Length: 281
Ligand SMILES: C[S@@+](CC[C@H](N)C(=O)[O-])C[C@H]1O[C@@H](n2cnc3c(N)ncnc32)[C@H](O)[C@@H]1O
Image: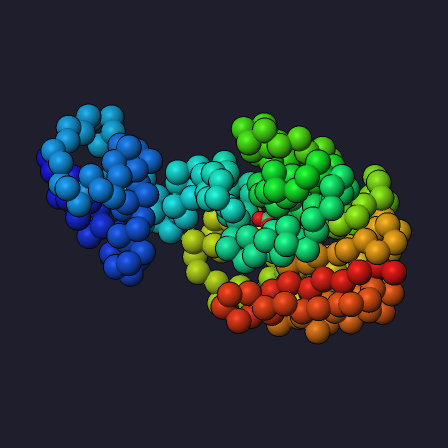
């Protein structure tokens, strides 16, 4: 069989669910992950032999994709900030907006030996990326999900990032274990009302524990984390939040009421309010 023929047949099957551009890029990802075939192989159109086992693997993957399972869960991996992270249904698939949060923290914090904690770490994408970019940072990460912590630990070991992971419920009132220069969090922030706007690949596959908050208390995590931060940030320590695009002003005012200064609401590359940050004085 020729590579182009295989690529075209996978892509065509996927267009029953995905638009053409998405179907094409998923087809490339599948071929690369399962057969080690690159885009160039497809362009050059080399001949290949696909074993029965690999053929079966491709078919199973296509079936999952056609049931709306995200490609990252099908392949068990996702790219984040230039690295590959293991993911499964216990962790949120890391998003581009979160890469922007990581980039901002790296740009604004050049000192050595910073103590950092990430609250609600999921796959560990935030603390691992920070640890690997900053000089000699001491990084901790917490999550309520033991299953997520196991994946985060696996990613940290694979990427040689020395992070301390702790099982911790940020809503419990128990204080954070230490004092920090930076507290960062991308907590659950999607309201139940917003469920209707979500695609089935997110709604039916990603962990609801990572996504949703109640409509009557959408800022529950922000309120709790701001209270923790008052006690657990050093003087001039910084808090960085990823936020629901509709709640930037509300998050900034929670921070200001708690004594944070220099609060900023920052937009993502799509022009949506996505990050709120401030300094504890
Ligand atoms: C939106 S996800 C963020 C995951 C990861 N930091 C990222 O940016 O891809 C929120 C995370 O918060 C965790 N979480 C939910 N409730 C929590 C709680 N009460 N205490 C600590 N973590 C919690 C979830 O398990 C999930 O991993």
